[in-house]
Image (cartoon, rainbow, N blue to C red; front, top):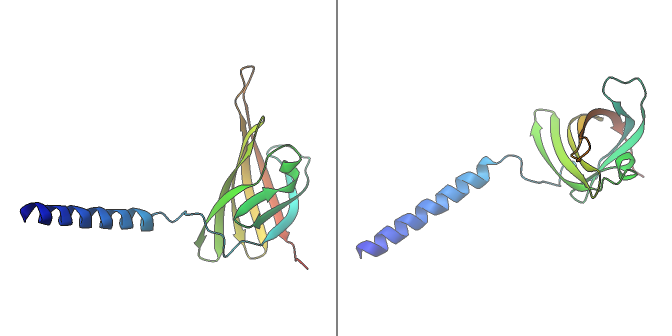
Length: 141
């Protein structure tokens, strides 16, 4: 009987530990509130004057940058957290041969602003560059 009591107590303790760990993570992948949004705007490398057009989308739980897709960086799942009137999001876009793009941004109203970092480790020299994006919500028909 004492062994059964210890077993039940241990099982209950593990259950509550798992619940606490799961509920403590506020960055779980979600795709209900910002999913379907699309932003069109400008992007460029920090510290450089030139910039160009890009469109970012949140669709079916995936984040995409249309401009970055042309360079081989595919869509990836995103995470977000609501803080007041803003949504903070992040995603890491992979490329099979060009490294990763780490996006971190904020959506406030109909404006999305983000910084992203291109990292690519190579034997002949690593790449570590920072870029920015600022866009306005694109109305979908």
